Image (cartoon, rainbow, N blue to C red; front, side, top):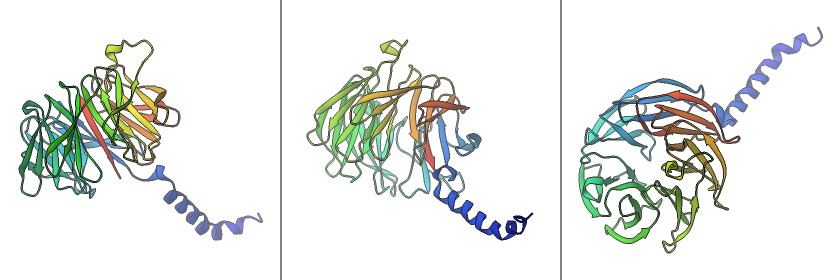
Length: 330
């Protein structure tokens, strides 16, 4: 009974310690994932803290690539059957406008200042520069057939686009709109990831079961990472989505119809682990704490949450039909 009087005065101290711990722990911060689905006209909303689907957000037809604006306030969604980009306010989760960005848009990137959309125009074999303020295209740059992945450099001076048919990465000067280099990579290049130091550009090759690593110094191909999955044919290993940790030490590659995600050590360029996920692992993204990987599975209509430390799937959540991509916001 001697310890009883201490209970009341100890409560404020315990509460303070608990609050401090909560503020310090990245795992308790609220994080929300938005997942697009090609066969549904909405986005699925996932609470990553509870690992549960909490609702949907209506959007335009056939939503595919989606990206948060640099100010963190809006979500832009490319909608193939609406020939538009939907602009969604993240505070209200409602559409606040549509941008007419051309026929059947799929992949795009935003300039670092958030003023320009770079959009791959697959049918026209071009990359479009779209000014958001005026709602008009300011430039069209001819590239290889069926352009796909798009990525702007952090300083805004370059934009890279892949060509699925030409098997190339095109390096474009944003000031002049000129293609300054065409780099031959693997078959059907898809997505791009830049190392944090800006020295390497990693490109997934869907039909070569590989990633090409480009030097940003001279645009030579430094190396190629080949993927193998036990029990899977090489033709079923179809890498598309790719992301990296902020320190640039680890990359994660969705291996498509091989139904796995590869964990790659960036320094050694070796696969260190394979995580079994859903059918046709299409795109990948990391939570803000980089503890959890969210994998979008296009043929099983779900997403898989993967624990990064153990490289093991911990949960699958049903989402819309033919999910395409995902973003995570706090």
